[in-house]
Image (cartoon, rainbow, N blue to C red; front, side, top):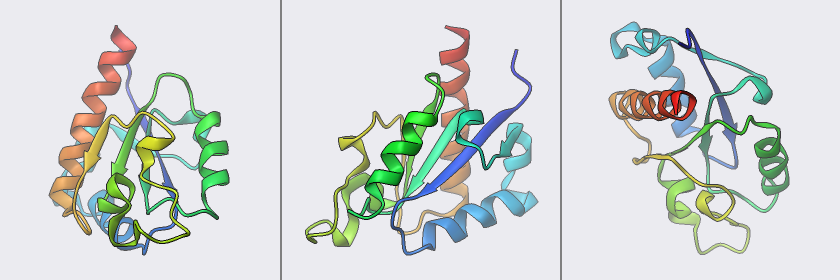
Length: 137
């Protein structure tokens, strides 16, 4: 049984709207992030869940790929916001390499521009359940 789940975030070229909502979801007790037994980590090697925000720009793609290689094999990848899911409003730009599922298997999509805190927590609940299934399989 796992006591704690480590969450790591990668900003791959976002406007920071999703990042602000993620921070609010984590810090405001009423959204219940703390009940998920999750801890935010700054070390990708410790991550069980990785959240990616942004449209995956040409400039951020090498960092994203290098960081994804550092993650453990048993991980859950979450695309947060419409940008990593589809490329967002920037999808036809010359500098957009996304969506995220071109580079990695995405387990959970949290839609929105930006998603609401409740949508974020609901997506994290789903991600936590998927990770526990992977570990216990």
